[in-house]
Length: 287
Image 1 (tube, one colour):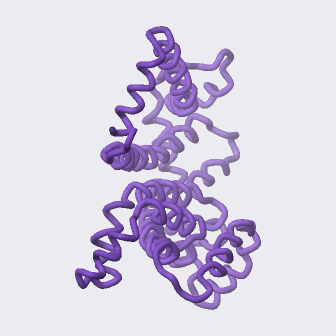
Image 2 (cartoon, helix red, strand yellow; image 1 turned 180 degrees about the vertical axis):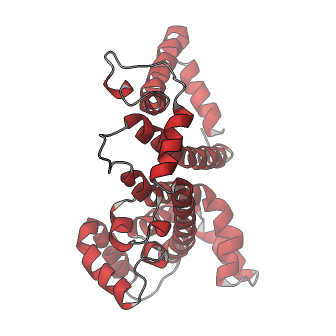
């Protein structure tokens, strides 16, 4: 029985009024989640005084194009958008690939100091990111990578959470018998990984990709440290430029830029979340 059918069966057991209350609760939660994004769009389509309106303004205005033109005057918005898309995509692809390989090795192979190495990987999760800024910056400076995309991509190519996530998922989702059968058929290590493990763990890879893409896209601190040239700015640094003005903060302009900068995140999330849900609900689950 698929996960979707189990969900439908559980809701059918609630009765008419129970189902009505359940769905009303879901709709209410969805509206609360969507409202901040909608209000950001509303402010972005009005003048800068809309943010102070009491009660909050909820009607869409006609100033979005005017506000966005001011954004383009103050920052190279589309260049920064392209930079963020490039950096986020490269980091996400490398994290998904290398963390999946590492998680597969920890889950399905035996080698010396395996448990100790995994504990060490997990232990790095408790170290605050800020503590690693100075040594990482020194390494980037020694390599002459300051003010380059390499300083943003290379240090983030693997992370402990990704290894932990993939190891936990692979250990339960990929039967050892399948791997042994692949070895008996003469498959090499990477071929077994690619042909047997990857099709099974695609939902976990997609989830890791979504989380990592969003994290890199929203990162402000590390790009601020290593990037000097405005041509290399990511979208978060470009948005920060909008706050440096002598005429006071123009919230209509800021919100129009923020809304546009959020759209790629929403598109990526919707595309990959549908893929994850399809992967989770297509399998067979015994009831």
